[in-house]
Image (tube, rainbow, N blue to C red; front, side, top):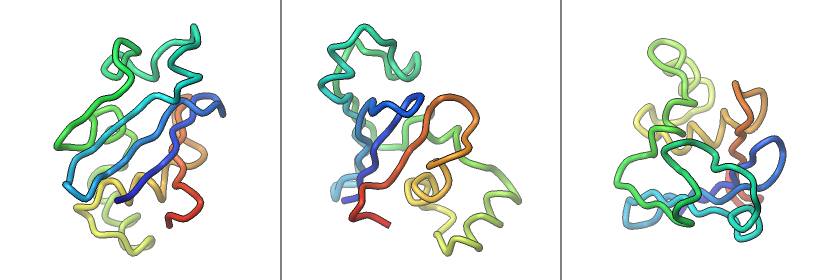
Length: 109
């Protein structure tokens, strides 16, 4: 299982998990969910506290590079090109376009 913390403008918004059953789970942090702040995206609105998917949520997938840039990142970071979750963990921790950052849990790499 791999897990990451999702921040919006530096504030913890939720947790993104890739389970051993090969399922993606996004769960809003309790405090963030109960606040009046908006959801992190239209597709991950605060109508539900937990979302599940067999594929990486498009909102997060769209934070990744494509084409040649993706190949270069994967080669430099030694990440399998088909492992979008690991690539996200290695590239979306800072300097992202927009307010969202994704950081691995301290025990993840």
